[in-house]
Image (cartoon, rainbow, N blue to C red; front, side, top):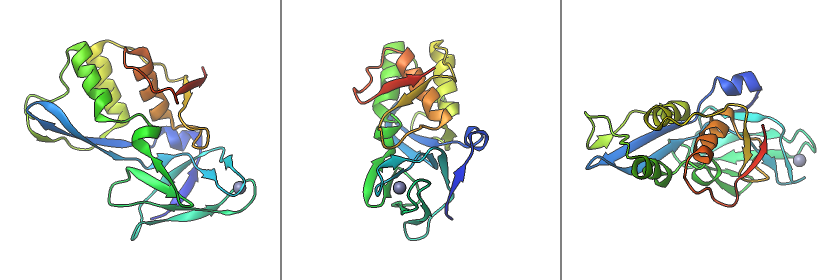
Length: 189
Ligand SMILES: [Zn+2]
């Protein structure tokens, strides 16, 4: 268990995951397990420069580490076996909102592009956990949309930078007809 700073190479080799439940061949529920994320310090109000890897928690306690700027403790708490949100010094962060990983977005692809994400053998029930990259690649293959791994986005000025898999996921949404929420901005290419 714990929380650790990771470098960009480690971040590129680490993945956030999703698990989809289908009902009548349609997406019913999306579970998230987000173990790679940015952090900010509530004490000095600064985003930490790198990314962090969550490696498990006990009774919801993930761990803490010192702010790289002011040294204050940044404590991370989660809720359950799966990491859909965290609390950073009592401030909540929902990955569905921060990472734009919601069933609605995937449904949009199904409806607008006439694709189906449900494997033939899985009209009803849960998929295995898949990485966000695998989910993105599946949608790219089905829709023909090509994404770029050099584009970066910001969805919350505190929780910044976003991990590589999430930037590329948002690039898929950005290149599609999916309406992006107004809290999303492109910050570099
Ligand atoms: Zn600080």
